[in-house]
Length: 154
Image (cartoon, rainbow, N blue to C red; front, side):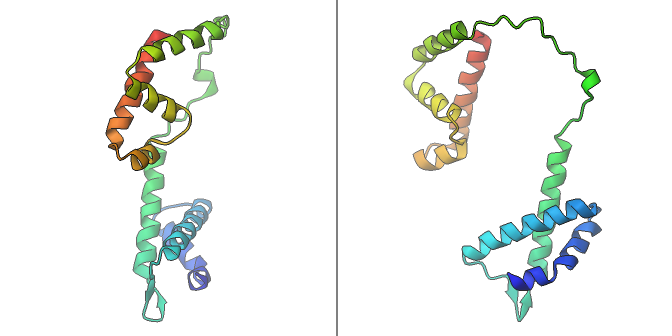
């Protein structure tokens, strides 16, 4: 890992050559260090002869840059002046809403209810899929179906 870190400025220059600002380039290079460290712990060999495999580092940096650009494309920035906040309807009875949701959950098929409860409690769909050997999209669709049903109820 020290061989990679010695060329830190080279990695930043590579990311900047993609059209990335210096501050963001630093972040991407730091992300690359984390990814490479994880791969090294799993047994990846990134050496080419007696030096670091520049191609592998380049591809990792390029992939991280593309991932960042994809994420930026999905972010919409709006002005606070454009947001119409309606604060008049604050008289929601949360106890009634909770009871209503619990009654509806009891009516559901046990599988749908359990999937919803696990994912809603914070377990990721991917993790649940790996542990239960149930396809990711089956779990995701079940969760979404129950969530939408409860939204309509409220």
